[in-house]
Length: 286
Image (cartoon, rainbow, N blue to C red; front, top):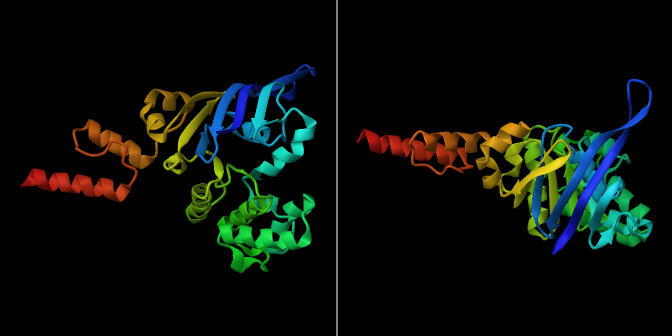
């Protein structure tokens, strides 16, 4: 089932020309894209390619100028659908500090369901269920501002989960985190996906897309490619054109294959790759 569909979607921002007249700047243009329910999809591209604009179109923070965005069968251009769409799309943005609205973790997570008018007993149930899902229940009474970056983003994810969405959108949510924080957030995202949630990961870290079901590549406001991680990594011409690189381990494995080593050209595990190379060298020495 297609949980999200974009058909020939374009969106433009207001811009001012040098002569003072009003013009427009492209956000996204002529985007057609479908996302399967329960899938884990990565959206990649360099800064300014339209990734964040697309994310905001998914939960009707922005409405298309042309084309249609359909979420869970609901057309975002119809005002009566906005509330339901925003309940079904949980958003987590780049800076966790900008998403904190309360001085206590459990109060911060409760903000979403409170705004939906959920009854108080159910709010408490949702808060602790969401904190359990991200492994942060023990921090319920803590101040979010005293947590690490990764912990803050897990709290932000819990806040999104408390509205019980069908889709979780992570819009550059690991960009400001250290490697540990990034790993914490990705582990939570993959755990939620295995439980059935559709996850859309917007990132410029190619290492983060290794275990995704599919990768959507954007450039100049358009979708220029979509495929499995291996299909995208194998397309060197595409990566060069959009200014991206395959993860270092995959890139090294490909070069080793080209140099005559008998290794998996799509190897993602640096330890395994190193072990395979050492084993082959030992056999050649014998």
